[in-house]
Amino acid sequence: LKPFWLKLFGRRAELLFAKVPCHSAFAMKPAARKTIAKQKKLPRGTRVNRGTLRSALLSNLKKDGGRTDINIRSATAVASRSSEETPIEERAGFPTKLAKGCVHPRNWITAMGVKIHVDYSRAAWLPDEWGQGVKQTQPTAKSTGGNGGILTTYVAPDGKSFFHKSVAEQYAGRQFTAEDGWNGQVRLAKLQARQGLRLARQHGSSGGLDTDEALFKLLQRSERRNLPPKDAFHVCIVSARRATKLEGVRDIFTVESQFLESGITPTWYVDEGSVQDYRKLGLTAVVGGKLCEARNRALRDARTKGKICVQCSDDISCWEYRDGPNAKERSDDAMNAAHNAARRLIVLPIAAARFIVAKMRSCAEPRPKLGGVYMLGSCARTFASDAFARHHFILGDFFVVEPDSTVKFDDNMKLKEDYDFTCGHIAAYGSIMRCNRMTLNVKHYSNTGGAVTNRDGKGEEERRNIAILQAKWPGMFRAHPKRKNEVILAWKVGRGARADDDGDDDDGEAEGGSKKRPSRPTATPTPTVKKVAAKRSPKPGETLRLQFAKVVRQGPKHAKASYIQARVAKVMGRVVGSIFEEPPSYMRDGRARKYGLADLKYDLAGGYIVLQRARG
Image (tube, rainbow, N blue to C red; front, side, top):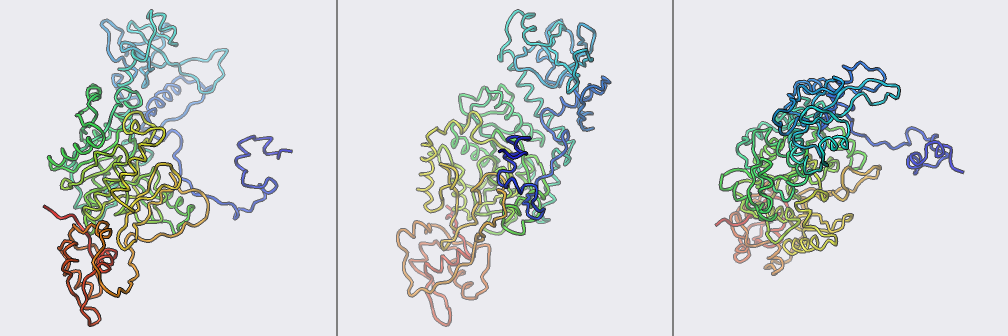
């Protein structure tokens, strides 16, 4: 026999109590129930999205209609006021092109004399000369209440109004297609992006966009002095084959409008076959070529202008930062609770870029030339580790590069080029800067065009690029335990120790449960000293791994032991290979010793020295 709750509530109840015996489901003690803190959601109607203004318009019309038999969803005061104040010419329902002798939308009325208000939305098939509006309805004998009270209306150039596409087509004498409505949909995407951003700014932290200053207050005084101005950036958006699809156009204007809000006009680096399509949308577009070719051209253009290069994907809708203390223990429940309790800031991309650069220029040596954000949509797992990482993967969807960086993208790679770019910067400059609490709302794998078209169903291209990574950076990557054809960067920082693991074995938030995750080593752990009987020259494999052509520079830490200070001073500024050809001597325990391989590994692991590419 089925339990009574399954008979009453069906599959939903079955899923709810799947892990609890039916005879004890309601007899559990409160202390025995496992709960996970959840993010407090804003009340419905206070969250800003592309349909907020239209919802506010419909809400206002329903209230003005005086009907009591329908549901009226309240809009925020900001949305209601903005909906009323927005000129009808800036609404998507306004005709894309006014026909000669047409009835102006301000004078639209139905055959019964009811006022038609210009809509904020637009049907995908509506021709340029036609418009779309909404009108109030009155109850009839067949009215059932609910969410009614409003009727969408399509208006012909001569003012005739219709409620159905088929009737409008009969009047026009032809069928309407998506090609007829293309210009109107492009205008809709542009208006919704601009109006949504403006409305989000007005809402502020009550469900919208926070000010730049709210993010910058999290910086220390010394870091604020390193905040670059907005015009110090060359913003590059790498895109391909997305300007002819409605979904792509919506994404394009969502990104473009957020940079324009900061007074920055981005440059779009696109494939040669699509450049005219992007320019038709009113974008500043140049031919970039294939993925890595476009990225390198963007780096080169920024370097020529002496500006910081910002590279951004074409499908990001939101930049988010979480400010709050770490979890008290390394368990999924604790990390989720800390993440959800943290203050959430929604910021503009230029503010995010300025914040990252300020952190890069204020950190301890070795100073990074590359900075970016956390690679997942949720940073819950980072609330058991440092808020900023120095030897971790930098996601290619949004990053900043200093103008004096000489690292380039590998043109042989079609995918995972950002992994290689990250490794190149760590090898050349000793570190990167990743803001573990800054995340993106970005589409992966599903969007049309771009890098998605480089993937194949069998994963052969993914495996080819992984092989390139493993050949160039042996021992630095491990296979992802849950996602096929994916890898995790685990950079070795010296003496076999690895930087703190990304902890990205699972997407999104930490999974529920109270099981503690094993602690991981810190970024640069102090290794255990092993006695070496005799110094020896490094083997060829060790020479390759340690990259003996690099120069020794001062590390971020200073040794307390005097003999370590002395030996570090003697190798400072020397090429690693020359150290082993003519090893310097230092005194320890009253005995003269030669600087050897074990000393180099120890000093690297301790952070007393770093290896940098020789200049010139």
